[in-house]
Length: 130
Image (cartoon, rainbow, N blue to C red; front, side):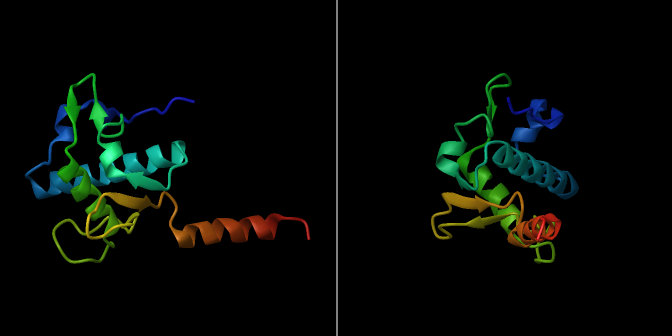
């Protein structure tokens, strides 16, 4: 099946970091949701930003807009922070984790965090015939 992009993907400002803090927070939340959905659809857990910036995830050829590598890093950085981490805009709920924290070129994308997978497995075990 073909991945269906959300309506915001067709909005040119979505690809440019927004200066207003509340708009930026909304933008980061939408990017996080899009990245998680993309990875879930393609069964990707490890995202290489070097490759991803040239993929349809971060490059909309119809609009001729793309997210830069530094902006993709900023988005994943936000996704990697917890909700209670200090800083403007809170955090992305630890939906990502850098594989190489120094280089920030690859990250684990948690479209389900480990504790959510544990719940899924527990439900499956509970529902399975004994």
